[in-house]
Image (tube, rainbow, N blue to C red; front, side):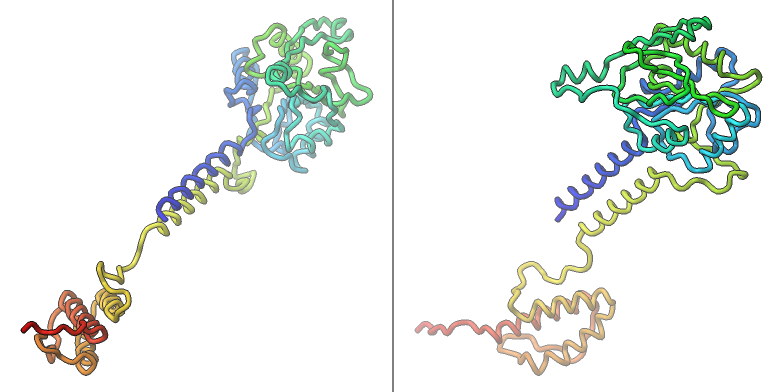
Length: 373
């Protein structure tokens, strides 16, 4: 039982650890993430450049009235609500610009709703990955050097950033302006007209990720983008609300709920506690060592133990004497049973053993032996 309980406890802890590790998409496209695909380096670079850059940890409905640049990176760790999508429309109507950094794997569970709100959809950009390890690794880590579109070159934009190739891309809708082209001449980054604002879609968030920001052309492209999309007096806002980092004020109402990690931790501790308690023996031991399980002594000893727990040994001892005297006659050599019981728990248990032993001799007398001559 103890081994099984220990195994169940270890299994519960393992399941809790797996749930905690899987709670947030990895890698996280957050400005707090130090992972290769996080945006921490880009955020601090803009800070040191003197740009008014902020980690927006509040609902999009509370975006500033002053138009600026909103940077939304995928994969999203929280689903966008209808209020968020309506806020993006109002942001564009006020002249705010949006930079959308897509997930190169296309595996984000909450990304489809946001893409649909912008009138975008994913299309496959590569064949199935190779089955061999070395081939798959080359396919997974392949990089692409991007070139500016002719219209961008004419405008003086010549940055050639480096990104992961990726396995999926955003389809280019009609009436778009290409910003960057891949080796096949397909638009890798393009601008979509959107009310009074501008929406620029980048097919791979690694263009500004920690591990690629310092590559040739990536920082230059970021500088060009700020010059084109950041209005004078506006702020560059990184959407952290949909990366799981949320700051809720009194104006925003109650919180968004208890974090999943906290709930799982409590459930795991409760489960381990229940397993620990059930694995331990509890209650008095009803059978003494060496007792004959086929005799009345087992029942008497169990009854005596229960009386001991109830702390009424005197009353139980007197009742035992009154019932045992006519049922268990005294044999030769036996000490007579007392008329009145006097004693405590130890004497009561001793009396129960005595009555049980005499009952056993009565029910199972010794075999007849011929006396020696």
